[in-house]
Image (cartoon, rainbow, N blue to C red; front, side, top):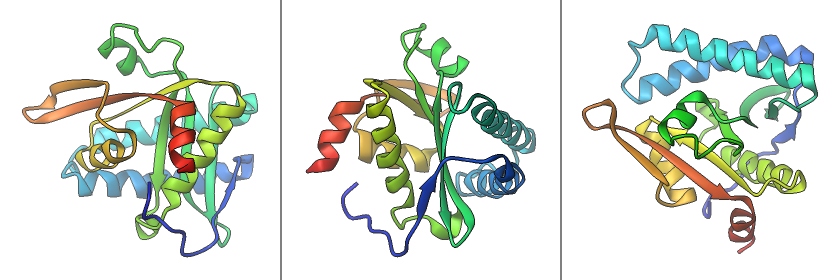
Length: 191
């Protein structure tokens, strides 16, 4: 995470009900961009499913006060520019690891608006989320990615993945899963 610096002040905060509509527009924009840069723009059904899943999760957070899902938003000049969340591991993670990640919270929905990427916003949200996890006495988390560009970033931050599902999406389209210690990450960021 070294080398990132915020060029401007980003406010990290919890979501509110009035954020639901702006978040829907944010999810559409970021999911489309993510698929385009990963060469997957033609996955229209997946875009719809992903958007619906993110909207469902934000509503879970708001309805339970963060107990079922816990989101953090990055806001710049009154606009939502980033999200991160954690919650129970997905069925995909549980199936692919023979239930080994049962009870290990999953970090997900790490999105940053395209024009705010590579400025330290995701790093800021990750550090803030890990502080929340530490305060909640959560000792391990997991995360996954099938997107090649995200896999490079996560490998840089978290090291080699714990699980590699070779050719999961297509020949050469691997799916990577990390299991990460919260305390270890907190110590690494202090140095």
